[in-house]
Image (cartoon, rainbow, N blue to C red; front, side, top):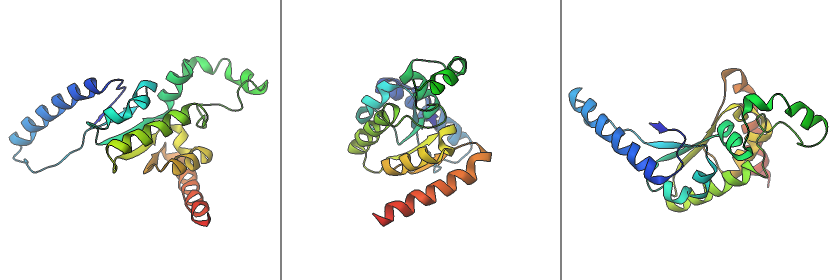
Length: 175
């Protein structure tokens, strides 16, 4: 069960209590008390990256919502950005569209911090991303470098993501 937009561990603790209570009720009623599940969070708020060590005490997995993390880091709406991003890119204000490829120096640094802090608390924390950047080759290479366990993207981008993941694994093996 993935809880979105968590900004504080107490928020996640509260939601985990609700999930656990409801899961017990449903599983008891269905006579499925042995069925396991995990509770984790989307990492979409810069504060969640900074406090990932505390959040990992409760979360059993992280999934970076890279579209929302990009929006909250840049302080702009992806919908509104379409009105000025082409100008920014054309005039060199931004090197590329941060919603198409992970901004490794801003958003990426927050991701790196969250991975490090989360796994410091919970060494085998499963971490991945979901969002369109999961199908971008440069973003997939970056995620591999961070040690993420998976990327997800829209179905039409899966072949590109798989190829990029294989290339990232091969290039790391050569080092």
